[in-house]
Image: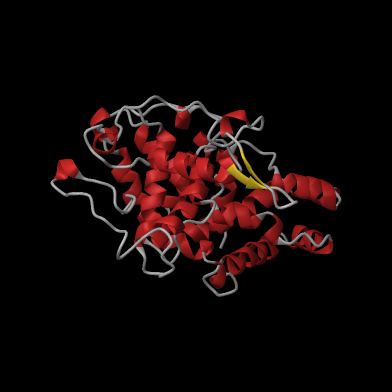
Length: 324
């Protein structure tokens, strides 16, 4: 599923397949394995760009895992690692460029003064695998198994806290299976929230637009004065609640606080109804600043949420839940 067409698997007893007659890289047939391979590369490059920058406030994802995938890293195998595949794909796109005059220039990426995403972090030596590479493999395999949704930017922010939780488990036996456990949990979580990532469903009752409006309708019931203030300033929920809901608040707080919030979310039977209450609680806890501020000030507050005590937010959300 993640192997370049035609690569030899001699050690597995399979000889190299000559694809030049029935299939080749220039074959326009949509069923061509090479066509699929190139389309997969586009998805992989986006995943690679996102996972390399996962949780930049901590170094965890840049460090080597104690449990790399030995099957892929074994030099006796002919499997192509995703890291190598990305490097080859990026190299080809970087070394050939056409300027505005139509002149094609050949250049080496090593001479490029602007650092690429590949050079942004030090690459671990062969035989090692960084945590972000494990996350990359999880997302790429998920995209291959779910072509209807594939990969959408932001999924990396969903899988990150899950993997971190499993990969830092104090029980080494459990930690060894972090990749498989994360994939299982991520797949099940996406089954519940995947509609948030499907643009064609945005305006349906199960889409993200409906859920954003639900935040405002809940706020109207709980604090009509604050609701009217936001309406008066034309501050739409799309300006801030889209990120809050789609990424389950993973971008609003530090990773340990995100895990604490998710613990409460996943423990609730109506977990995503509770998420709406958490968002409503976040608004109500800064109501005084919002009532006093103008559009610019309030947008800054909502896009860079000031309260860091997540227990206070969860307590307020629970009060809203109990007051129904």
